[in-house]
Length: 191
Image (cartoon, rainbow, N blue to C red; front, side, top):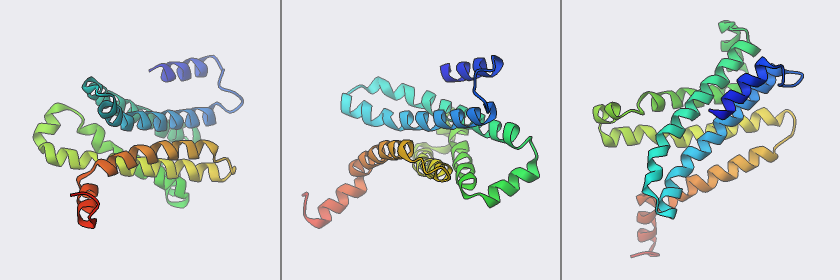
């Protein structure tokens, strides 16, 4: 919650620079992406470090990711678009980076809504797990959103850092997947 507290304090004390609306939109987007990376890092860290108690943090990080994406969407809808829903819909349709970002938000919503124990029991563990694999698509869409947003200014350094982190986290999962082991067995590399 510290980034949120800092943003509220900055807004209340006029400490967000010359364009506070843009600062809030960018900062909430940055924190969404950071927390998405942290959420996806929990499982690899848990496995590699042998710390099963880290699994308890994954849900909390996932919900904070959703909290910040909601703030990001709220700041965009309110501060940039003045809650003009027709203009927002037109903007989503016209600007690919906003369409991609909105798509990531839409895919993340069922994950947040099914993040409690009763939803796991109601859906069943396999269906719940399948649904929550949407986070990988969300991660790719989030990086694409960030890339296209930065393309206008040709400022890609930060985008490449997030892309590299997410690539490593997703590649780790791929190489541990049963699909990969099956492929290696078929090709004769592993018995």
